[in-house]
Image 1 (tube, rainbow, N blue to C red):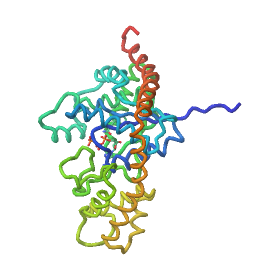
Image 2 (cartoon, protein in one colour):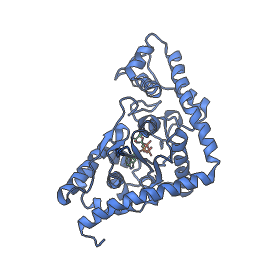
Image 3 (tube, rainbow, N blue to C red):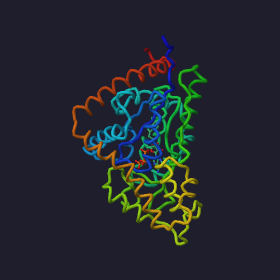
Image 4 (cartoon, helix red, strand yellow):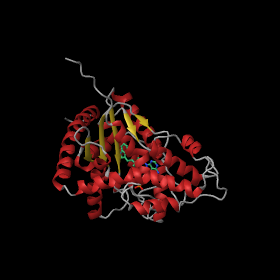
Length: 334
Ligand code: ATP
Ligand code: LTN
């Protein structure tokens, strides 16, 4: 009998705060799909994180369901991985509370996402927004994750997760695995198409042409790429002073599995019009089958219900084990 080797654990999550953007897909979802063969993967819908910004309740419920459906449409198997909704597993809130008591105001005040979101939602700077990274740490640590595949913008949150885990372990022994980030070389930071100096964000509603949502109509996706802001020198080249063209090269590279440099070499001497057409074709070819599958899956309500129920049970089983360990360490009667 062959000896079973335990695979490393991958954990990641995404907020149901809108239809995922091309940035979410290239920075995170595509890698989740590619990593599932070699790891034990757990992927969550971070709906508890999503309410740090005001949401419409009916829409949030729908977006949560649509996002789990989309995970499956992308090719992330609910049979071979655990897909679940964060609020279905009570251990997240319970561990987050404990970890809040091991996290300093000073370190949370340095989080750039908190600063950005506070500026964007100045009328609702709530305590949840401030302690958001602590809930994220609880997510990751509950599952003893080895690797966390995310985009570049989450690097700081991973560092604070490691700091909190190390602090707790130093006090109480080895309770938590210290996780590593997995940030892709190409596609980790896709920028807005109209403002390529800021990251593309799924909840950005200011200018629809800035964001590609992966369920946008195929023609609309192509048009958004064709309308993307560039510059006037008509040379397809990677450069910090050519953020629009550099972003499109990154997108093309990430979609086709090449580095941005390889993409640049491929388009040497090509005009912007032709270049944009090639980027649009590559993006559409990648996204179209996902959209078709999403439509089919959405019709099967019972199947999606069963995935959600099943995922919650499997996730809770793992999470509760870690939660009990942490509760015991801090002196709760468990
Ligand atoms: P929101 O608009 O609600 O803040 P978001 O689009 O920033 O959402 P998240 O749900 O916060 O997306 O992130 C989900 C995953 O997508 C994370 O791993 C994050 O690092 C990654 N990601 C988000 N935006 C980008 C981007 N522009 N480029 C690459 N990866 C991204
Ligand atoms: N904060 C993340 C979403 C998220 C997450 C996590 C990512 C919530 N919990 C755990 C990785 C691991 C974001 O992308 N904004």
